[in-house]
Length: 229
Image (cartoon, rainbow, N blue to C red; front, side, top):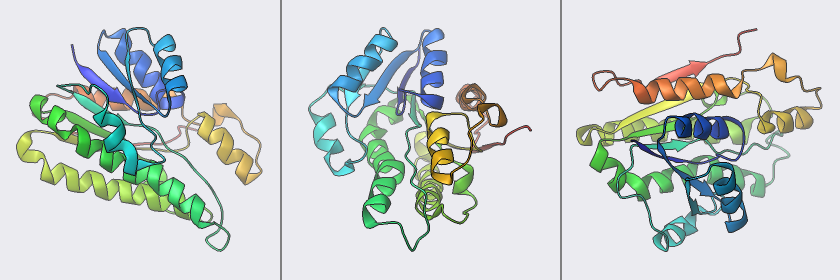
C-alpha cells in the first residue's frame, strides 16, 4: 500500500487523483490551507489524513508542519494546487505576483524540501502538475507563466539532485482543463465557458497515475496533455 501526499485535493485534478488513489486502497495525506478545509477533506475522503499549511504563505510551512505528524515514509508527493491571475504586465500589482509565485512555485519548493526525508526512504516520486504555460508564455499570462516556467526549473534541478537517492521527478503539462480554475480564467478573459471544449480532469489524473505506475527501469520525466478537439 503506497502513501501519497496531495495538494489541491479539494477540486479539479487533485480531487480526481485523490479519488482514484483511494479506490486503489492507498494511503492519502491531503494538505489543506486551514482546519475547516481539512475537516471537509476528511469527510469527502474517509480514512485520509490531513495536514494544515497555507501555500500562500510558504515561509510558515516549516513551522506549521513541524507541529504536526508527517508521514514517515512517502511514496509520492503530488503538487496539484495552483492559482491564476491574468493581466498585462503594466497592470498586475505586486500582490498578484507574490501570491502567484508563492502558491505555484515557492510553496512546492518548500514542501518538497520538508518531505524529502520521507521520500528518500522509499525512493519515492515527486510529480509537479505544471501547465502548458510552463512551456510557452502568452500575453496577459506573465505571472502565471513565470511561476510555471520556474516550476519546470525546480523539477529539472530536483531530478538531477535526487537521482542518486532513487527519487523520480515528473512534470505534467496539461493544456486547458475543465476545472474551477478554468472557469475563473474564462471570467477574467470575458469568454463563455464550455467544459466540453477542454480536457477532463480525469484524463490528466490518468497521466499522473501512469507516471507513478511506471516500472523502476522507466523514469517518465515529462508528460504533455493537450485538448483533443
